[in-house]
Structures are given as C-alpha cells and as structure tokens.
Length: 194
Image 1 (tube, rainbow, N blue to C red):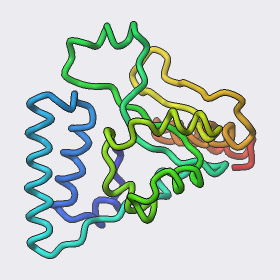
Image 2: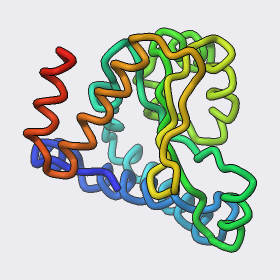
Image 3: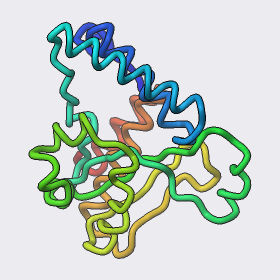
Image 4: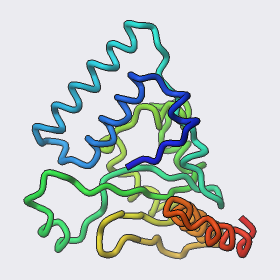
C-alpha cells in the first residue's frame, strides 16, 4: 500500500485519489478475476469523468521511483518460483514486486511508444512491461527485484556493479524510513555517502 504524505494528499484531486487507490488495489489481484475487471471499469469511468470535467491527469513524481546509482523502480508482477506459484494458485491476488533497472536503459526501452518516463509511469500496465526484466538482465541493466510478503523478498541480478549496490542500499534506506527507523536510515546513508 502506498504511503501518502500531507503534501501528496493536498496536491491530488478527489477523482485522481480514487483512481490511484483503485489501481493500487487492482495491481494485487489476478488480472482476470471478476474484481479486477470491476476495478478496471470503475477506473475507466472515473478517468472519463475527469476528462469530461477538463481536469488534467496527475503526472507521476519520478523522484519517488528514483534510486541512487542511476536506477529507477518499476512496479510489476512478482517473479515466482514453481513452488511459490503452486502455493498461491488458489488465491485471487497476484503478488506484485518492484524491479530496479537502469534509468537510461528504461528511457530507451520505452521508445517509441512513450516520449518520456513521466508518460510511461502515468500510463503503463504490468502486461505492457512483461519482458522488461528479462531485457534489463540481458543488457546488464537490472539490479534487483523486491517481492514484499514472500519468503525470499529479493532477487538479484548477476555481476552487480557499485551503482547497483548503491541503488540497493538506497532502497533499503527507504524501507527503514517507511518502518519508522529514521536514525538507522540516516546512518546507512552517511555510511555510504548517499
């Protein structure tokens, strides 16, 4: 679940807020479930209403997704082992994850469909980025995947360089902050000069 700051809440319209909450709930579901379909329809209705009222769609703030070392986080479906997929086959929810890929690689990968990362983050779906992780691995542009709620939450790339390790450390620092451990986060940041 996304954490909302007072600034975020003050800067988003009621319709935009409803769309974000419904999308957040939808991403945790099997995309073919009846609830996921209903949520998609509700989002489409709200987006149509927003367009009729002449309201601009909120542009995503890329700073929320940017990591040290030139990496950026992208939300997607979690990579599951055969055992994990078997254990979860009877649930409606599909586990999600974030992957850290090099920002410059992602900028090239999204062309020509998207003109900028802002457009991409405002419009992409998990299905449209199905091959992103594999392509990033092939091009040495993948650092890690974080699968919250699974027994082994991290999957790492091969041959990680210092920039990938900076991205990983930056991500851990953010997780410490989310869990109220600001002092530990500051210590980690100072230790690695982030």
